[in-house]
Each structure stands twice: as C-alpha cells, then as structure tokens.
Amino acid sequence: MTANHRLRELDLHLPAVVKPRGNFRAYVVAGSMLYLSGKGAPVREGNGPVPKVGAEVTVAEAQAHARDVGLYLLALIQEALGSLDRVTRVVKVFGMVNATPDFTSHTEVINGCSDLFVAVLGERGEHARSAIGVGSLPKGFAVEIEAVVEFA
Image (tube, rainbow, N blue to C red):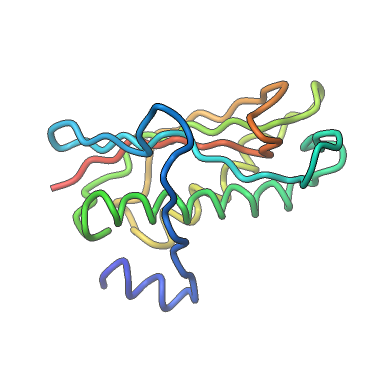
C-alpha cells in the first residue's frame, strides 16, 4: 500500500510547504539521506505570554501539535523526494517540548509525530528518537521537531 493511499485512508492531508524565513533550508539532501530542519507548531497569537506544556497546554494538545508538525515534515519529504514511497527508513526524530520545569511527559508529546510516521509509512516510519524539554522555543512553539530520513 502506498503512503498516499494510507494518508487518504486516514483522512489526512499534507499541508502546503512554505519557504523558510531565514538563511537556511527546510531540508538538505546528502547522498541517500534527507535532513529536515526543525519545524514548530505555535500555541499562541500575538505578543501575549507563551503558554507552556504542563501548564496552559495539556499533553493531548501538545501531542496534536506534534502530529501537525509530523504532517508538515511528511509534506517536506514529499517535496524533496517527489514521493513518500522513496523513504526506506525514518532514521531519527528529535523533538523539543516547550514545557514547565517539572513536566516529564515529553515522550508522550512527541508520540504524536512518531505515531503518525508509523501510521503512514509502516515499519519504514519506525525510528530512533530523542525527546527533551526546553525553556523556550521560537515564536511560541509548543513543540519543535526535526528528522533524518534515508531514501532510495
């Protein structure tokens, strides 16, 4: 079954890819490896205080943000490779959670992205992973996730 078929089956749609705002690339291809820059999901509008996971943002809400980031990363893979079916393995996922100092459910949050990769790519979506808490992320992101993908 193709990855696009799985997306349709799961009623998921890849978002539009936007050009990064800065002097970097959204992804870099090196040999048979695809390196995806960190992508985040904002949890606030305007200039108010940044909500923290573990306080104003629940684990379930942050997990949904991680899933949204995962969809965007899949869109980047699609753009870079022309097809998600060229993925031979998601090698590594690195997830950062904008959390309160006492928060300890970082892995549950990043599962939103990891579970999506496996749902869409099957065994090829299984990966090594790190999930950490940070004191802040750009633009009020609840999570930021980057990935390394092997392709053929």
